[in-house]
Image (cartoon, rainbow, N blue to C red; front, side):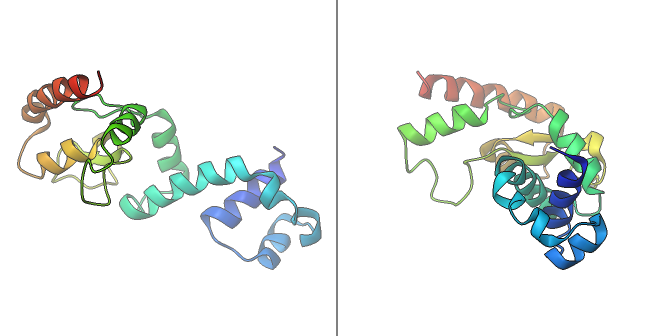
Length: 159
C-alpha cells in the first residue's frame, strides 16, 4: 500500500470525509483513487472494525493511539483466556448460547472500573461473560479467580 492509499483510507474510513475533500487533501483527482475503495477492501475492513470499537469505547483517545493499543493487545479474555476462535466454536455448538446480541466478539474491559477508557494501561480484552459478570463490583485480582472457573467450563464445553 502506498502512502497516498494509507492516507486515503484514514480520511475515508476514520474521518469519514467525502471524496472531493479527500482528493483535495491528498492532491489527487478523485478518479485516481476511485478504484482504491474495493482494491483496499481487506485493510478497509480491518480499519472499520478498529474504528467501531474506538468510537464506542475510547473516542477521547486519538485513533492512532487506540489502533496501536488494539494491535498490541492480547486477543483473548484477560480473565478466562477464551479466544474469539473458541467463542466461535461455542456458538457453532450452541447457536442459542445467549439470547442477547453480545458474546460473539471480545469486548474492551477496564481492569479498574473507576478509571477512564482513555487510560490505555487499564484496558484489556474480555469475553462477554466475564465482562458482564465482573460489573463494577469486583477488582481485577478478585475476578481472576472467577475467570479460572469460567475457563474450566469453556474447556469442557469445547471438548
